[in-house]
Amino acid sequence: MDIDKALDILHLPKTASPEEIKSAYRDMVRVWHPDRFGNDERLRQKAEEQLRLINEAHEALLQFTPKHLTDNTPSEESCVQAHAPSAAIEICGMSLWLIRMLARWIDLLLLVAVMGTAGWLRFFQPNLQHVLMLSFGASLLWVFVEANLISLIHTTPGKWLLGFFFEHRKGERSDLLLWLKRAFRVWIFGWGGGLWVTLPVSWGYVLKRKAGGFPLPWEFPERCLLMRHPVPFWRNWLGIAIALLLVTSMFLAARGNFVLSEQKGATSFQQPPSQNQPVVSISSSSKSVTVRPSPENVLKQSGTEQSLLQSGGGDGSYRRFMDSELLRCRDKLDCMPEHLPSRIKEALITDYDICSGSCGDLDRLPEGLRFFGVEQTAELVADIFRTIDSLNALRLGVVPSESMPLDATDRLQERLDTQLKTLSGKHFGSAQEPIDRFVLDYTRWSERFFLDRKEMLPAVVEAQRTRERQEAERRRQRMLQDQERQRSLRSGVRKPSNRAEAIEAFSPLDGMPIVWTPPLPPLADALLTPAYNVYGTLEGVEEVNGDIRYRVAHPFQGKPRYFLFYPSPSLQKRQFLTGEPIWMVGRLEGVVRFRTKAGNDRYMPLFSAEYIE
Image 1 (cartoon, rainbow, N blue to C red):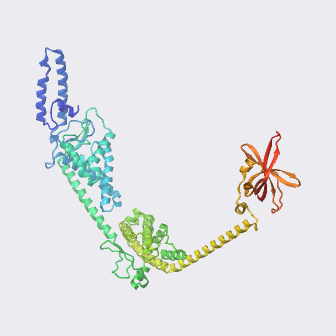
Image 2 (cartoon, rainbow, N blue to C red):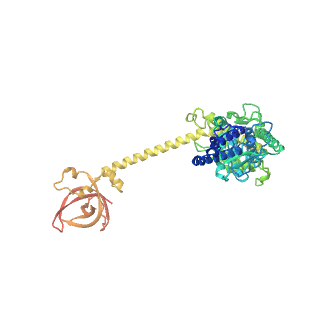
Image 3 (tube, helix red, strand yellow):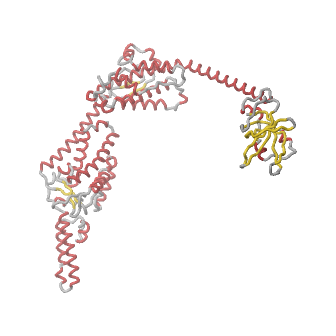
């Protein structure tokens, strides 16, 4: 029977004590005892039915309120057909809900410890964003772990240590979907979705429901209960000790990771402030990355700086690559070095020996390099190089500053700072120093590259202007030639050699409407003046008064339409073939009447051809 229904039958509040339940039960039995209605069979039957409900309600309340649950703490839902629980020993006077919360903390801390042992925590750095991600991921993963554990063994490690077990109501059976639903509700309402910032809101909502006498959002008392069984005294203290040990170890591990990140993020190159300081400097004390514009002084570097430039791969493959890039860009106005991760990877391995031998032996690689990968490291270094190039190009004036936003330098500075801090926080161990040296070496090479580019630019700009002037002159000459050709075509000095020139020379109108619907004579001057372009298939030839005229057919609305033409004297003689497609430009000379086989009169326009194709 449902607990709420049992309380309603006995007219009891949810906070009723065992004594109040016993007293109410005795009163209800006296009122509804069937012997009171011995003379009325109908009332006697109703009294027996009511007394049966009273007995069931009393039995349900006795099972629901053992001694260890008399603090009126709502129980969580769960499942497992079980025997009646017995009282348990309290832990130092702690209330039941605090013990339950401690059990859940032990579960979550155990999960985080397992994840850390498996290496998952190595991908997280000690900052607020990663802590929130870890809290969210671990608590969400526990939703599925907890549901499966309860479905199989009816408890979790933390609950087992403190004596909690899930038990089914009679007639109910274990359901994994129910456990998933419960665990997800606990994650949302009890832990704020795994985010610490939302915990006050979710806990405030839960406490408000509890104060109002409502069941907690994840409880299903009509189906299952969370019961606390008696456990040995040592197991309670073991649970508390494990919780304290896990919290302490996580704190020390986080502190150790932070210190390790500080140490591995440092670089051995520390230079005193001077006018010859490079663009990038990494300070081990402040862990700050500074970009300083001093390109004019790079040419006057001291002997110490020159030795730094030549150390650790300074004359290696990537230095030679930068020289080849300078040659590639010598004739280009807009040109930047093209950094390929594969080329950077080769330089890191051969010139800077970041793997301390073979990169194929994963066991010998530093931890960060093993998990982050040499290829990903090369891609990150390539992005840093591109940012350094953009910053040097902007500050040295290789890129016009008026075409860039006012805060472009600050944005590039911030991006470079972020990239260098990310690089120093990957825990590369012994590989961190050669990687930092490679970045510092490239800083000098990049400055040298753009200083040389700045010296090249005037000649490149002048050469480009010369090419533009030459191209402009060529376009002007072509335009003059086109104008002259047009004048010669229109004046008739030059004969058209193709259809485009014929159209340009005569500017013909479309003569096909005249072919489809020939005008009747006499023809107006407006029809005889312009040139027309007409086309069709050569069908035959006829001779009239010694003049040769060719007949051309063109289908229109399913019926043939005809026109005649004769070549003008200015055209060279050529051989025509029957069935040959004809396209011509000519002038309208007249309209010729002819009689069809049916005896009907029809008309055909006659053209004098000036161009035939």
